[in-house]
Every structure is written in C-alpha cells, then in structure tokens.
Image (tube, rainbow, N blue to C red; front, side, top):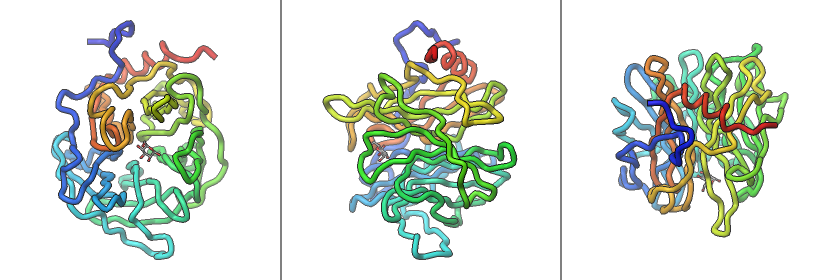
Length: 314
Ligand code: BMA
C-alpha cells in the first residue's frame, strides 16, 4: 500500500521484531549497533560494530541467510596488514560496505591519532585486508559510491573533531585508485530542525534513474543532548557534488524504547540499505541507541516521492 504522506507515521516502517541483533548476541559484547550488511551469493554478509566489555570498539564479521537472523563471529576481524604503524584496531567503528567490481570495500572510522577513515577489502568475508588510512584525522562517516563516476572513484565523508563534534557537513572527494583522495567538495550542510547540528552520510548511495539516493543521519541538540534521526536526499547521477533534493521532514526518528534507551539515548543511525529492484523494497539497517541493530523498510517509489514532496523549497 502506498505511504499516506499526511499520516503521523514516518516513511520508514520498523520491522515488527526489532531489534534484529541485541546487545548480547555474542559473549564479549557490551553493545552491537551501527553495522553494515550486503547481499552475497544469495545470502547476506555483514561487518558489525561490537563494543566489548572492555569498551573497545571493534568490527566482527557476520553471516545470514535472510538478512534478519545473524550469526556474528565471537572474535573480531583479524586484518591482513602491510603497514603495522597504522594498524591499531581496538577503536574502529561505524563500518559501511560497498561492492565495487565484485570486491567488497569496507570504510570505517579508524583511530589513528584521532578519528580518521580506514579502508579495507574482502572477497569472501573470511579473509580481510586493511588497505590504508585514506583520510587523516579528524573525519568520520565515510562511504564509497558503488562505481566510478566520470572516471574516478568517489567517497562521501564528514570532517569532524576529536570529540563528540557539535558541527558537520557532508563532503565528497574523488580518487583514481581508492587510495589517494582529492578534489574535496561540500555536498550538503546542516539545515534547521532535526538536521540542525550535524549531518553524516549513511548507507552506500543507491543508483536510480532520478539520481543517487542518499540516506543520511541528521542531529539536533536538545536540552538532553544529541538526537539522531534519518533523512534522505537525491544527488545528481553524473555529478554527485550537486544536491538535487533533500527531505525537510525526517524519514525515521528515535521514538521506540530500543532507540531511546541504551548506551546513548535517542539515536537512529543508518549504516546500510539493501534495494531489491525486483520488489522495489528498500531495507534500511540502523543502530538503535548505540546498543542494538534494527531494520526498517519502505518502497523506493515512496522514498523518491517523499523526498520530492517533503523537500526544502530553496
Ligand atoms: C557518533 C558515533 C556513532 C554514534 C553516535 C551517537 O559520534 O560514535 O557511532 O552512533 O555518535 O552516539
């Protein structure tokens, strides 16, 4: 049934059995959230952010046949590393996975003299190679586009600071080889309301005939601290530095208990989206309250219509 745009319900519909991964899914975990998943050979694979009971943040591989019930490895990923000087993995978090030309590239917030951007790759989700620190401190929320645009790889990211960052706009940079990044441009900045403090890219942008659909998080500052909601935008297909539309109204905001109560209250933080072109369904995976992994869905037709109907006029 098409979305009723006048209704009080947000566009994204929560999965009835949320959260799909709870904080205690593996023995060492204090919390499991902000995790990335992809389709893989008829099944699903993921890289999960696990904050352990020493309060380190590390990434663990996971597998699933349906994308809902996950088996997560009890040990963190053991990365194959060529330069040990940048290979500390105790504070690595918020992964995104981008399939490019049959390989799976992982970007995450690496800790190397502060939050920076790490890049790794896997072909089978069993063996993982750390490629390098591709953006220096301070930066977070990096995600690659799934193909070259104008002959160059492109990556969204969010320059930041060493703390909890009370500012932040989404940038895009490009590269000839995935390792060397330049031509840095601002794509979109903060606006009013739910996205007034900072914004950051979420899942891998989805290619549609109308443009790249970007699902992102936006943060407002309330008297009780930051509140993380989810919105969406459309970027130009040939030039993703060019923003076409973005939602003034959020598509999901923290209102359920598992989004409002946890290690960090009032957080919905999207890191992955799977688009099934056959059914038209978009599944969005998001972290709830920095504690658990949740799922919400909508149709691509509704998402595109919502972005256009609820956009800023200027
Ligand atoms: C950000 C990151 C995210 C987290 C969010 C809300 O700075 O740490 O992983 O979800 O804060 O706490």
